[in-house]
Image 1: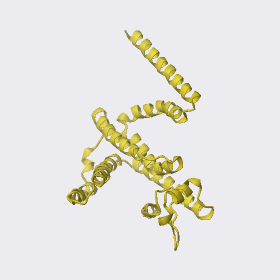
Image 2: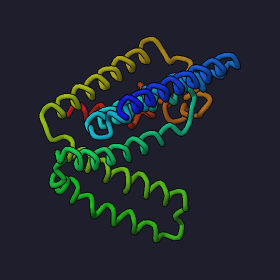
Image 3: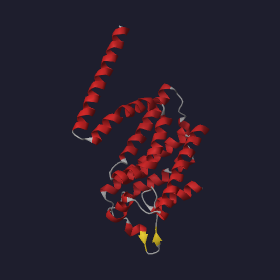
Length: 239
């Protein structure tokens, strides 16, 4: 039975490889490059997903890297809606934490009770209180529930629980340092060389020049969504 099981697994793997290569070939023949890229990346995504199912620190790192770069990806690919991937990764981190807690019993849930999470509770009630305003639109309510309550409290819990070792803190600080240094180099490029085509599209086609090219000078934004967020990020990183 063990030999039959191994043979069945080998047959299944070969069939998946065959259909995957066939789909990739058809996508290339019909010049569907996005589909071909998706097929090529799919095995890596599945492997990382299965590997990280009981290793939340891995998905936590992927979440941090993507959070730092998805604005840049959207700007240079001119693609909208990629922020939903952050929600998917955030949910997957929480699922991975539950699986790791069940399989390895190495998640210290008590760390979630701290000053940061407790002090956020009044803000949650304040946000919910704003929904009683009759002028509040339904889309604003959904944004508030998603970003100000759901995502933020989940992120606080994730950071509080997973930043439980000096190695995790070291990796997090190194990742942030690399991103901040890249932002610094990019803003120097914008200052002394100029804006590239994607940044010019952001400024002059999407209308960002009204808030970034003003009478007092140019407000540089580097890889970030806008100049205000860029300034907040750099000042926070300096602290």
